[in-house]
Image 1: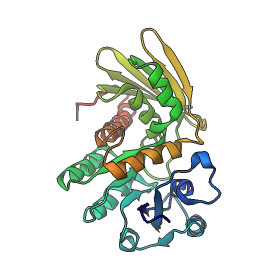
Image 2: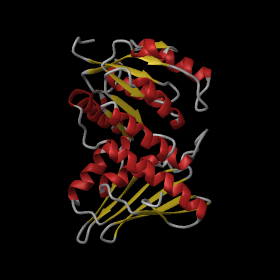
Image 3: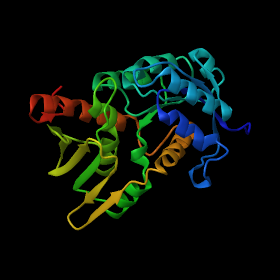
Image 4: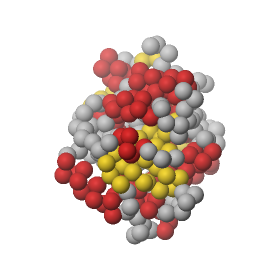
Length: 299
């Protein structure tokens, strides 16, 4: 470990992301094109959630230990002496509670997707961050996909966007919020902030959400059971560019953004983006339950 490396405390081990991010930072066998230098996970705090088992936690613990990470079940021990915190908790209902625990330590925090389990708790996180002057970033790796960003660079004035991805089954909480976040991140990366309403329809194969924007712009998010591909189409009045995400590289692409955020306090997006995404998803759940469109300024 270089003395100038950013020392990361990783909180949570119920997600494969805890392993995949650490692999790209410090696993000896990580392919060179996936590696990110300058950061190192020093500690990881493990605990049970509905998304894991003790056997899985043990397996991941020994793998992280082989890469030089000290795994503990004590939060205070995990964050001692760290330069930054990554909240890697698969169960989004725990994000607010664990973020509260981070408020007393003056380091930046990355919250893995989604920001929270509902808009109300996402807003609470944002309010606490503002009140305590806390630097916080949240995103899915899909936002950073090079394929998506290349498509956006070819169609800079998008009027319409179509994004597709899987509707994974959450072991607790709402599946649209837990896994739909990936596709909503891509949509917002294309269209920017400012969504007006969401209209969600559910059938046997998944959920389709129509998102209305000002000036008759429109986004469509298609979430499909069992289809683990990500991509979409970016359209304007005179161009249409389709993309499919290369899932081998997006963790690396996200880690590079996280590194800039930890170093400089800024990334290519901010917490307001994550807040709008959780709002779009929470209101989409309300939309398909009510079977009608829901305006984002209604609640």
